[in-house]
Amino acid sequence: MSDDVLEIARATRHHGVQRSRTKEATMFNAVIAAPFGKVGIRASGEALREIVYLPAQTAGVEPDCELAARAAGQIERYFENADAAFDLPLALSQGTAFQRRVWDGICSIAAGDMLTYGELAKRIGSVSPRAVGQACGDNPFPIVIPCHRVVSASGIGGFAHHGGEGFFRDVKRWLLAHECTANRFELR
Image (cartoon, rainbow, N blue to C red; front, side, top):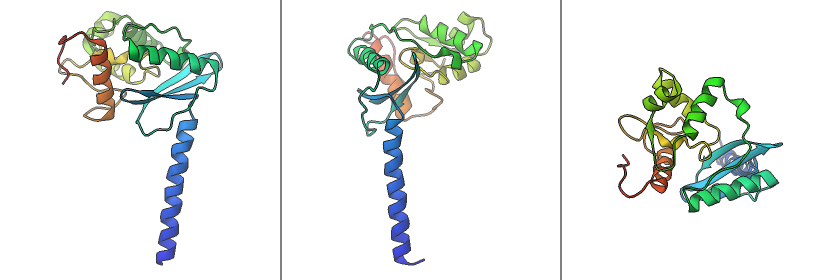
């Protein structure tokens, strides 16, 4: 393959990456700054469809509808005050009956408190901490349905179906630290 052909392939591949990053940001009705990166908000009709944690380099997007603006405002208030309440219409029909039961259980955990996956399973009448963990990972509305408040019996646990160290666990640590009082627990 000639050097010219390789250069065109590199340029095309790079252009495609740039286009996808731009397209990714425009897939949201809003992308707002967060202390740990960005938060993407998707709305459809009269309900929120999804809230997504995004890396800091994601382009910001001004809210393009009243619901996205309302969600952005409430999330920004939460970043200022962990006790801020949410009053947003959520498209919960996308979850199964079991997932909705888990999400209801998560909503009963106060800011600054935590339950293990096993404790939440018992609280909602389930026998499977693993199934509770899966439902936590499937939560399309993190922060509003605060799944970060559910942790592993042996540590912080995963987050948004991401185990191990990295961006998502750092987000979970930030959210828990934001909500806790001094030295309530050790973040591992």
